[in-house]
Length: 474
Image (cartoon, rainbow, N blue to C red; front, side, top):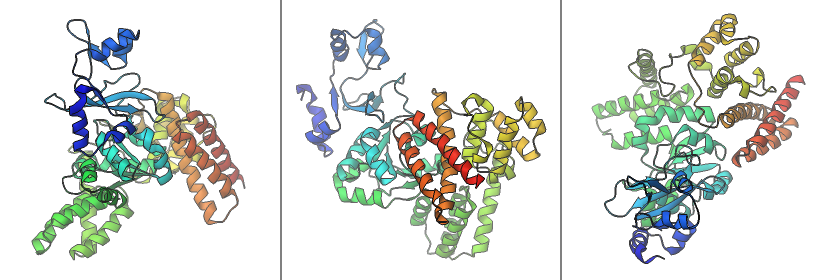
């Protein structure tokens, strides 16, 4: 309502957002003055340290407090519980940068916070799906269009910390931004996250050149249709390739096939690769066996380039490439658990044991660690494949962030959850009455982690391990 905020109100109205929308999402305005907020807060008896540590101001060269945000539309950023942790500001004039967030500090880490999750989480849990956008107004547009499951990264790419957070709420992530550009750099990481966290990454085909806010302003129904029609990440990339290809000639079909081969070869799952090979062979009129051989040859070439250093691994840079036989059989959650057991054994609860892990090589590694006094002793006493895994993990420090205990709980919970889901699925197919107890515990675990209650989540995980053990004893 401030007289000097007219430009901010016009900016929002020009994009279709009225006063009701601004109030709903608590959009505000930072005046142009150098220290308007700082002087106000100091009059409220907040100290300099309070104001600077909250990221609202900084000390300038004249040793005076200067406001962090001036002449910007302000979007408050909340944690999942609904507590404000930062601000995002959009410049209206020639200020640079165009978008600015609070500096990182004790409360705010942009790689771990998602704008709008506090409003979206109920619908995300109900739908089992979250829509990830790039901008604040994109989130507002999705919510106003009737898709209140949208969140946005705060000026950064989607990170593994984001994915780990979202996994507590949903099993499907829909990207509502330029996934062509994102895919060039992050395809392998997306596939790894899908496997490690049992997620599906899909892409909403937005109208050409339009972000969600622009699409909503054009036609809210088209935005909802794009979100509802999101396609799996690899399928989206292949569809885009085919749309741009000239398939009227043999040469054009060959170029399309070569491009598609490289995309399909990136996917780590051989069954998924083969399904797309069948589809491509039909679309392009190419012999399926020849196409299948080309995809596998391209995949072997990628592995060779990585092993010789011509292509960097997607993460854990500098670690030696794993032997092919281990890479083929090792579950990514198992790998994270063994990393935890090697580098932070104090975070592995006493009730956790090897049989919870999905793969024999990981079970062997966990048993070797439990039966040895040192890592070196475990490697010396282990079979070859287990020793190779332990040697690999020894140089791969977990990316745990600042809260190591929380990270350790998350790893343990996700491994137990995966084991319980496997067991529950088998029991449900066999119509075993024990399936009901497993389902109840899994639902309680999901709810606890969605509410960021790791203490309860860890307790329920221990109950699930007991439930698994009881099944093995029958």
